[in-house]
Length: 371
Image (cartoon, rainbow, N blue to C red; front, side):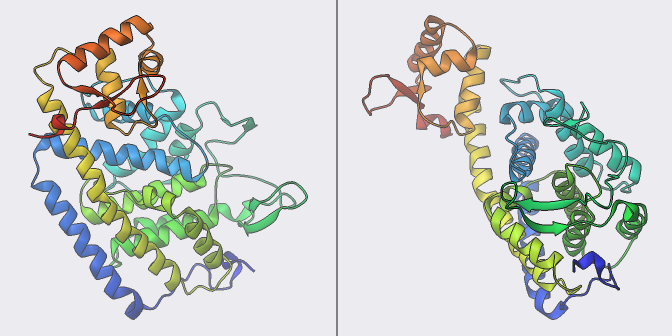
């Protein structure tokens, strides 16, 4: 029996004594992170917000096994927020749609969550009406027949393991009405606890053909933004869930097959959020390093190719940067790539790597990160 089949569903209960100490710790850390960010200038705040939102969108899709182009995501977010950044690239409709959903959730967190808004998010995520090769319904809840239930499975054909089975489609109108009524009510429930419950509740209903996980995490971010009282995002729950993906699916499965006592789920959610807040420090280090780099580069006359490849290096380039890779990234000839690189070597922006090899590779000069 799944939790949504229990007689008193969705009357969740939990042990307040068990979760309160951890909730107090998490709320205190949230306050400290927001306090630190408010002490920074507008430009650094905007850059940190852009970095976290990019991370959030990319990692939320990664949880579902979909790899988005980070440069497209970053450029799409910057365009939607009216930010000028170097090395902007065009984003496809799918990336733009996912970005629009996330920004609507976090920038407009104070507006009610409605059926129409959820339909809009779902349609934005699947602008062609297809998920991979499969046609899906947008603009309505799923309507799968009873003999073809919505299931979360693993394993190959003939060896499928069913982890969860969602409510039948004929229950969705009533189920979503209950959830949205609760979601939009003013209550004394702490926003972080409300975010954890909404996350579990929505993903258990699983109202769409596809995209339920990403919409669940957008709803979670919406409530966390309400709790922070800010549309600026300085930590990413989705990035931490991606790191802990197996534990995330394990606790969801355990809770969805358990009782209406969700204490264990709330404890895991709070602990995960605490670790997400911890990881923010690493993200902010990247933001500060990039800010210092571009300040020191302000007097240089860099072309678009150089800005594009440098941004890629600063965002964490995988492998070694060679002239051949430069040419491929910047879509230019090998001779043009070598000229671009030589200019940056002369300006001491880049350095040749000391390690030998068949191809010369390049790294950013560490002094560029110092002010």
